Image (cartoon, rainbow, N blue to C red; front, top):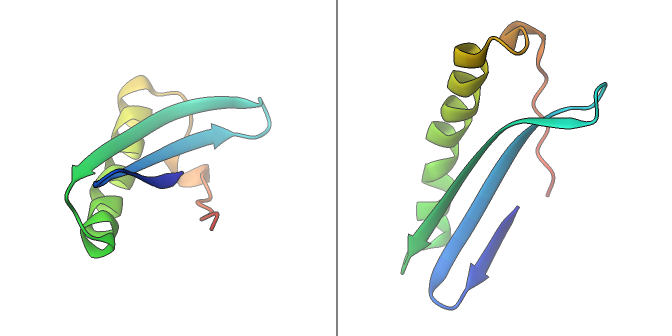
Length: 71
């Protein structure tokens, strides 16, 4: 999810186990006075954060995960 509230951009990523219908991990950021390009620059470290949480919790095999981007 992304959105702009006032002068801030907000982005939230969720890693979802669709077979179990549950959220496995989340990552979010708020960028004050940032541009859309600044927001895009935050996506790779946020994805890494999601997978780090998965590995640390040993919830699922990270090699079995498919990533989808919803528009």
